[in-house]
Image: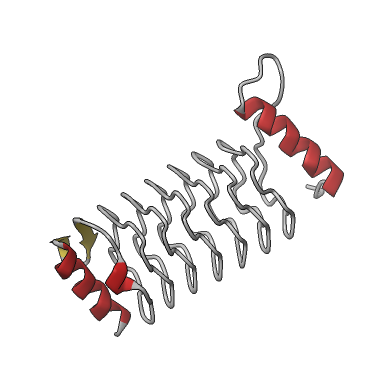
Amino acid sequence: MTQPTKDEIMELLRLHEMWANMIPDSGKQLKMEYLDLSGMDLSGRNLHWMEVHCAQFDHCRLIKTDLSASFLGGASFIEADFTEGCLVKAQAGESDWTGCILKGANLVKVDLHRAKLCRVDFSGADLFKAFMYGADLREANFSGAEIHNASFDGTDLRGAIGVETVKAEWIWADDGKIEGLDNIREWLFKASRL
C-alpha cells in the first residue's frame, strides 16, 4: 500500500475528527495500518477511536491530543510529546514509547502490555488501572504519578525514578496485590534498583 501524502493525511485526520465529534452525515473513522505521522504537530486534536495499528508518531507534538479508545497496537511514539494528552482505554500493546513525554497525561485503563516505555516521563500522569504487563519501564520517571490499581506484572523497572512520590492505595505486581502506599513505594524502589 502506498503511503498517503502529508496533505492526504491531514484530510484523513480532518474527516476523522468530524466523525469523532459526531457531526451528522460527515466524516469517516480513520482505519489504516502503517500510517506515518512522524514529526507532525497534532496538538489539541480529537482523534479518539482511531484504528492505526503500527502507525509512526515518532517526534510528534501531541500536546492535549485525545487518542482515547484508539487502537494503537505496535505503533511507535519515540520521543513524541504527549503532555496532558488522553489515552483513556486506548489499546497500545507492544508499542514503542521510548523517550516519550506523557507528563500529566490521562492514561486511565490504557493497555500498554509488552510496550517499550524506556525513559518515558510519566510525571503527574494518571495511570489508574493501567495494564502494563511485561512492559519495559527502564529509567521511566514516575514523579507524582497516580498508579492506583495499575498492573506492573512482569515489568522491568530498573533505573526508574520518582517512585518514592507515586500515589496509590494498591497495585498489581509479580507478588500479587500490594496494598498501602509505603509498601507500594518500597516494592517500586526495590524493582527500580535490580
